Image (cartoon, rainbow, N blue to C red; front, top):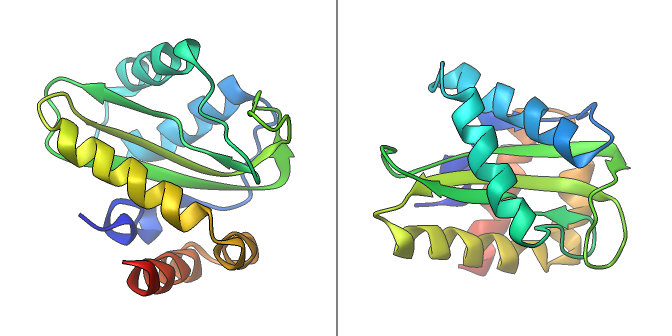
Length: 154
């Protein structure tokens, strides 16, 4: 599965308002469940927080990848958040997170989960991608940027 499919335009939130980690979880999960998973918000947030309590999913260069595995889910679902000012996230480099790839996958499809993590990590390492995605004006243009870089790198 491609990242631009998981993070379709309807699952991209520009100008994230949250300033802290728990707030961003709520804001992004609200966007995610509003599209296809009404009624699962509390369950999704619980899974994301449980994973986050193990170790921060905030990495470097403004990237965070909150993720989790859950029963009774078909494939991978996700939402991409872009923050203008950054979110206090407890990242490994102590910098605010600005690009947040949040996703959940089925417990029975561990290989797919790891493949998504690998793709996100690889694309996020590209400084040009980070710069371009932060400049996106619409969710559609952000999705197009994601698709262009994914096609270049994979």
